[in-house]
Length: 234
Image (cartoon, rainbow, N blue to C red; front, side, top):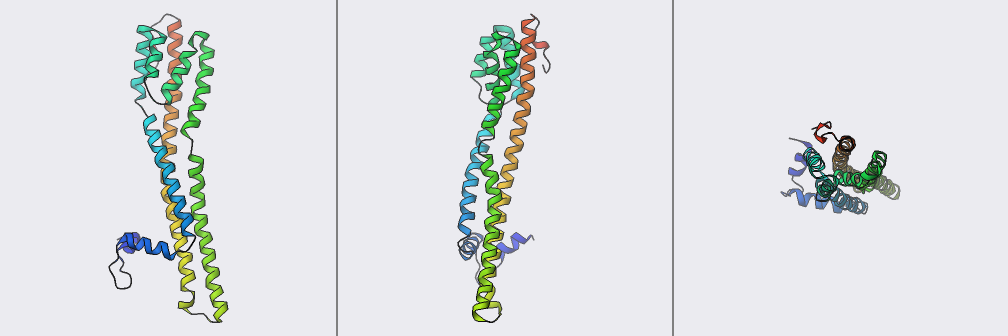
């Protein structure tokens, strides 16, 4: 049995307390510094869920999309390929469309457009992650701050009473431990979502870069009057 399972099943004061009630009671006993940790958790989860939904919507079947664009280029020309990009969501399609819109200006113009719009799309993908990273750092900081405050309360009680007894310092020490535990738990939860979002962004960026190379190769073949299907990756 894990430590978490033991804590959740542990009876408190002779009563069979459920895990939710146990967490609520510990939260109330943790003092004022539990509220900043809770607010950080709520805001962090809101940003994390928004990023995950956005990234999942941006993730498409890149290989199928590239094949469709190349087929449209070869059969109906650049305008048809632009329509395929316009009807497809995601950063890869947006970068493709930006490059195709500059196709009549030459390959150099296409490359510049692809690089510029690629940077813009990457910034959109990473939007909000800086706040999520901040919350990951702040959660344990507030927990440790609550720990220090709890220890100050404990030593203040000792100084006031002029005596050391478990019951005298238990309250302050309990606050210290609870704020630390909750702060670390919040940081661990948000770190998981942050790493998932970063890995998703890295994969989309790699696909975007590889697809951009294939787009330029296809346009070079098209301008040379050769079949676009000869471009790498098909």
